[in-house]
Image (cartoon, rainbow, N blue to C red):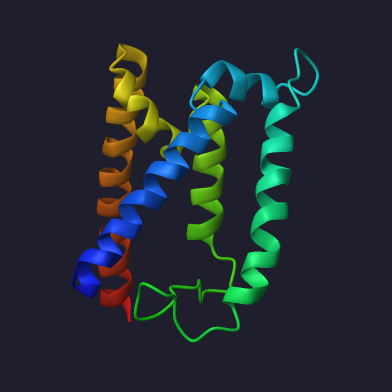
Length: 150
């Protein structure tokens, strides 16, 4: 098996395990997510336990991985490099939070839930894709205006 094929297979298996975990944790159920966000109503703390469990599993693994030169099935790690907080980051975080709070979905669980084929999920996913395309067009326009101004 070629290294590229092995890398793709590992990515596929990792994605399937992640999708299974999202489903088992209830992250694909918008009502469960909205109840988690409803601190002063019918609050459901179970997703906090899911997130805490994920951190407890990942934290020690991260400490090991950060010392390595490259992953086992890849040529390099793709660690985030940006450290500054700018308007683009803040606006993106606000849009993500508002969308999550209104719909009960974020992109990963929505992608998993698309397999249900239900109209609300498909509508959300279509809006997600349209929003991503619109954001890319807006950013391209702003970047070109910024370049012309320089």
